[in-house]
Length: 544
Image: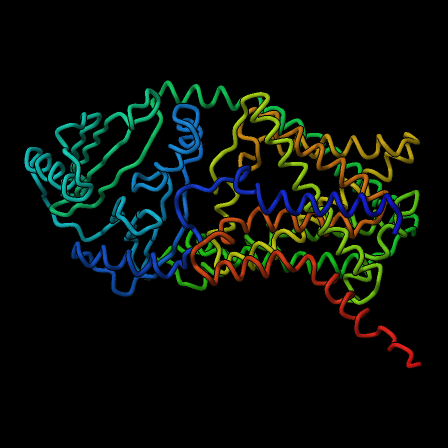
């Protein structure tokens, strides 16, 4: 092994150690465990409904996770990371699970809102067609509302300020609503709000949440303006690039320069993976089902909608892989190991080494990201944000989330690397005669697009995300030209799976840990199979 190879593997090992030791410092988690099974929340929600004499027999439950991202950002600015982490461990609505219930044949829906540890945050009954006529007087309702807030949340309701009080009569049913609030933890920007509503003699809603003041809402939008603008510029560049790539693909197709069948097979598999991941999302099924419809209608709507949403993996994946394979300057050579990988020839050296390099390079990138983020923290006063948030929630909400993460992010890795590296980089190098421009331009666009993705570090300064992801894109571009397409696909895939599996990996629920570990390991399966085949086929020592 050459000195350069020893240094390279040493840097990857250093990155692995950095990830093991420092990953929690750049992706800190809120003070909750979101890896617990959904069945526990459903059981607890049914207990709450039973305690309140709310009929829930025959109702179908759905569970979703919600996090108030912008409120967390404000809290971190005002109180720091550790205090914000402590506050997320309280049942105040910063992190909450919704358990929704629907029943065939009735528009009535039930919702129980709870903290991840099972404490109650709110209950509601919406669109109940069977409310009793008439209702409470305004005075009786106010007394009931204060009583309910004190009993449910164990606070002195007299310390709250009334911000809204409404009464109306609809179809002979008297409806009341009372909203009260207080400053949250002394913050000048946040209020803790409590609401109680009745319809007839029934309490139809009671809950609490943390919200910005109007001035703070405007300020939050203003602060996000620059990062949103930079991100949208990145998306504009990517959109123009995709149009150019598709036009080039059509010209290649007309000229008979490309093979369609291998790329078509892979694109079909990627479509199935994205579609399968979407079908694991119980909330998508919940939204698709209007219980006054026949259940068949809901399934047709769900399947058709998700098929259309998954078409990007088929359309762009097919075009980018087919066209990129014949990209000028060696596209066919760069994708050779990838095609062997898709044929499950994982025992081949070129496939096994790409898997091993991709995994090692992923840890090296992790180490680089950690160094950069820590540099922002110590040199510029930067900070990281509590997780999970944003797109994290979509993955964690799905049934068998570890499987959904693998199914979704492999097509993402293939399509992005086919676009940024295989197609864009190869054509840019041909047009500019510069390999470094071919590495840098896609990396910059990659960084710009990720500017507004708040789950990436650092939280502040916001432009730090663009810089960090640009550097990662440069590393992947270098690896593409130095090695091959499969290496960067494996590296990209592993990075995504590690990030999105992180809340599951540190959960106290053992099955979540195991499933997350298995999901992360999938990127390295070809390397394991190749190494095992080498060991098995090693010649026996010669007896003397």
